[in-house]
Amino acid sequence: MKFRLAHIINPFIANASSDLAIAQPITFKSIEIAKERAKETVDIELLAACFEEDASIVPDFIRKTAFLKKSVLELFEFNKKIKYPLIADILEKAMESSDAEFIIYSNIDIGLYPDFYLKVNELLKEGYDALIINRKRIEPQYTKVEEINQIFVQAGKSHPGFDCFVFHRSLFEKMFLENICIGVPFIEISFSQNLFHLAKKFRLVETRDFTFHLGMEIFKRRAPKEYFVYNRSEYKKLIKKLDPVLQSKNLPFSHLWLPLRIIRYGLHPCIPIRLALKLEWRKYFR
Image 1 (tube, rainbow, N blue to C red):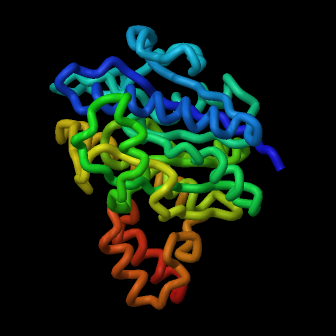
Image 2: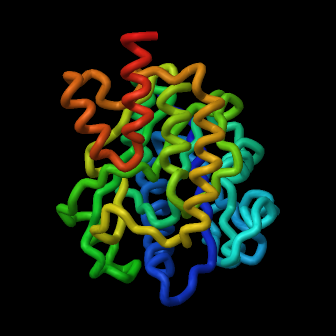
């Protein structure tokens, strides 16, 4: 079975001193390699949703959608002006630009292993309508595109966070994403809670050979606190709207013995422990 996949990213011209200036070209190359590897098996559309001023960084093999027009700056007054786009707008560009059955969104600093699309296609054959894929952390000494084959063979370490999402296009119209912006904490939690509870058959892919990130950190806050506070507020709005469908059985690790899953929730950066406990209480006492 051959699925049509539309993979959308949000490239931008990063400051030369930023680690994203190093990561993006490597991400681009990894995507190109993965598409070439899968071209006989999977129908893949590569899409870039960006602001007009960032268009020059998009490689020719990735098709640009209509330019993003709105950023978080039009929605709130921040002391420090950073033009973060909204995840809902990026996904909307994917929906407008492609009629692919499945949409993939990944952070711009997330590279793909050569068999990424092939492995995603195999999982989708099992009937999943949503996947979240954990990355592998790679030592950050690699800084050049020419080193990508060396990156591919590194053992690396696992990472619990969420930064690559795959979902059937029918789920988009059901999602509550409010005005969550990317590049700031709470994007991962917001996106994942939608997929956990709206998908008919969800899988968390924890194996380490789908995607990679250059850097060993678990948490890395780039955004000023005021953006953190803003996204947290938007997250609270969307989780209230999702409340009617929230169930503990939809969360990852729900199959574990209660004490073990509570520990997993408490340690996981993308599953709020207070929400998990609320849903456990609801399961037994509602």
